[in-house]
Length: 297
Image (cartoon, rainbow, N blue to C red; front, side):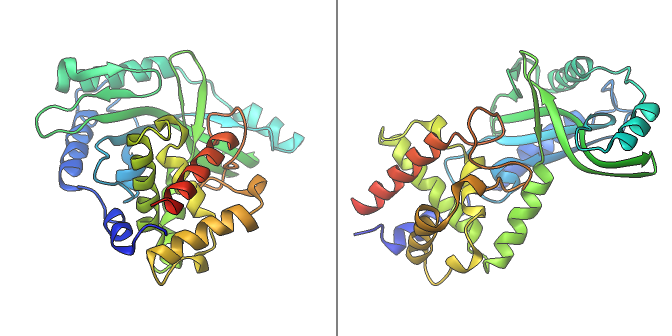
């Protein structure tokens, strides 16, 4: 039968933004405190995730915040020609402010404001919900540069991202600004259909999890955004029913899944064994579950 248009329309609506905005402002204020050890350094605080990308649904409550230190950066120089790599090595100055020191300073800045509500987790620093404040996950990140050219400090080209380290020392590199900017460009190119359709798919995932059909870890929101980002803009429009059917049919029948990219366009979307890509088996489990949900509604 398919899911009725009125249900899809309900699922397309954005979740609460007022409480999330207040939470973000409280976290940002704490991170920008003049008492923070890193306050004299160059850093920026910004949103990432569903709330930051306007794809949040009613049941999502977490606010994802990044604090990015720019005075210290990590880099990938594997794509540099030999002469450029030599120039980079001559110019490079080792940092004296370590990532572990920086992360501890961020934890302390948050703890001084929110006390026992702060927990230093495996990837993020969690600030628990309290009263009207929603739960927030804070990533203490440093700038990351993937160099394509380096002749000198003033003559270089690189993709800028962020990097952080898990509690067991694994480096994770991502590109949240490119992710957000690309989603917005694609949303506009699809005449405003992309982000509502992402919210529809996320609500379908939510119901599948609630019904015990799908494990919540199989389909993180980040990858759902990436999946629909790859769908040609012309597949969206007319109705939510048409948009869903066209998108899923394109993914299943026309797309070369090995060439699908994350919305940041820096990584392939479907790749085995990496922290920045979606396990193909998990993507297939999600697709089969939503198709069955659609057919059996």
